Image (cartoon, rainbow, N blue to C red; front, side, top):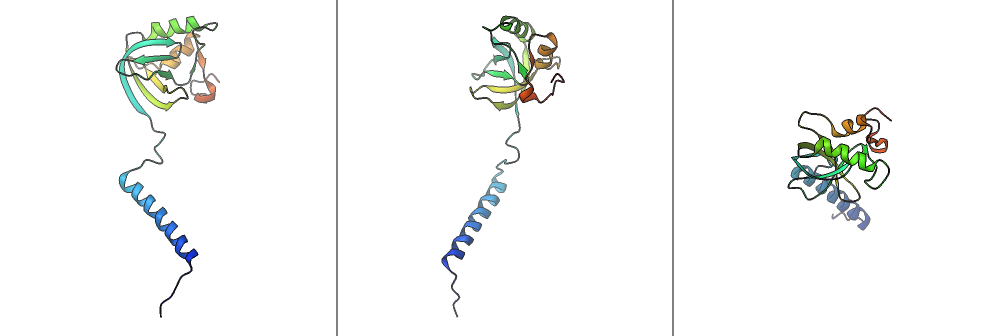
Length: 144
């Protein structure tokens, strides 16, 4: 006796099998679902400073936006001070940056450190030239 299944059962089984194949295949090839938010690092010398929270590194065409830092734009009140403060802090130095995101302008958003280990955002905040970007930092620097 041949047992026949309705088409709906077959379609449901096919969907389950396809989903199972995707999950197993992803596990085998290592698709990082849980690790999609992990950061990666960059280390290079500063090549150009654009304003109080944005710069580029040598060999990297994409601009870097300092994570957790909110500095006035260069043409806004306090902008030239913020830009000069960042310039005096990082100009010509080799930074170690941990990229955590890419913003809507295509810039890397990164937490960056000076050769002596100081956090650039923390130094800028403590200097008074910029403030903590609480919306994104969620109080990481303790000023929110």
